[in-house]
Each structure stands twice: as C-alpha cells, then as structure tokens.
Amino acid sequence: MIMEDERRAEADGAGSKVRTFGDAEPDDYAKAFSLEGGEDFDLHVDLDAEPEHESDVDFGPVTGWRPANCLETLKTQINARWPNRRKSSDGMIGDDRHCAVVTDKPSDHCAHVRDGGVGVVTAYDITFDDRAGMCDAHAVVEAIRRSKDPRVKYIISNGKICSSYAVGQVQPWAWRPYKGSNKHTKHAHLSVVATKAAYDSTKPWVIE
Ligand SMILES: [Zn+2]
Image (cartoon, rainbow, N blue to C red; front, side, top):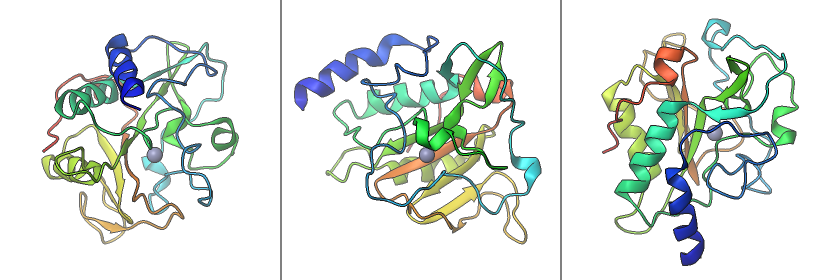
C-alpha cells in the first residue's frame, strides 16, 4: 500500500488534463460510488433543495471529462498537507451505474456541467482517515463550511448536509439531516456551484 500511495502521489502533479470516461482509474480520480460496496444506492445529492439550485443539465455529446479546477486545487492542498493520507474512499467521476440514472437531481459526480464540449465534474469525495494526525475529511469540510467559501454548493458529512443556499427554514451554511442512504461516514462530499468563475477558481481553500 505504501508503494501504491507513493505512485498516486506522483500522479497528483498531473494537472487537469481532459480524460475519457473510461480512464478514471487507477489514480485517485477513482470512480466515486464503486468503492463502498454493499451500501444502498445514493446519488450524493441535496434531496431538499429547490430546482433552481440544480445545475442545468445538457446531455449533449462531450469528448471527455475533467475535474473542476477548484477541486483539483483542493485535492492538491490536502495531499500536500497530509502526504500519506488514505484515499480509499476518494472519488471524483461517478461510475457507469451511478451516472446512468435519469433524475431531476443529477449527481455532480457525473460531468453534467458542459464547458467547451468537455464535461466538468463538480463534486469530490474526500476519504475520512481516522488515524491520529491524518486527514479528517469531516474536519476539512467543516473548515470549508465555516469559511463560507462562495464556491460551495453543498457539503455532506457524517449524516448531515449543509448548503450555501437556504432550504425552507434552514439558513445557508446550517447543518440539517442528510436523507440519503449513504450517511457519508467513510468520506465527506463537496459539491461546487456550476458557474465557471467559481468551479474553475484556483484560490486556496480554508481546510483547517
Ligand atoms: Zn460524493
């Protein structure tokens, strides 16, 4: 595993080149959702949000996908801060089963944001590493929540969700229960807004 992590660390410097839908693995752009077998199907979406908070979905042809640059920035930051962190529940692009689901709340792991004919993935799953001094993904997203970073769409962590928009009587940035079947204990989920100025911003995140 140590060698595998070192190999992955080298891949981290690769930048956001366009990838085909088939080449997501084996580096740590690993396909989200295929890694936590046995859990009920869960799209990592905000089930409470009004439709205006969903991205416009364009199912037109794309030549490949890339991560949002702001998520690339975040991944680089946490890998630098915790070089030996576990990545077993990391996920960026959704797997085929996940992304075949047609819903009015599409997963942000499915590259439905179109940018110049390329699909942009606007969600990132960060592995919760419970070892002392390692990457506590739930603490990372809590720091992001407290910073009220305008790039955030919503965050899912340990059975709760918060969003940068109000939901009913719940104010922006306040936690509320997450209704999905995957309670997000093994990883934390971050979705970013579908505005290019936001999702491609490389401004550093507040991660602790
Ligand atoms: Zn996710």
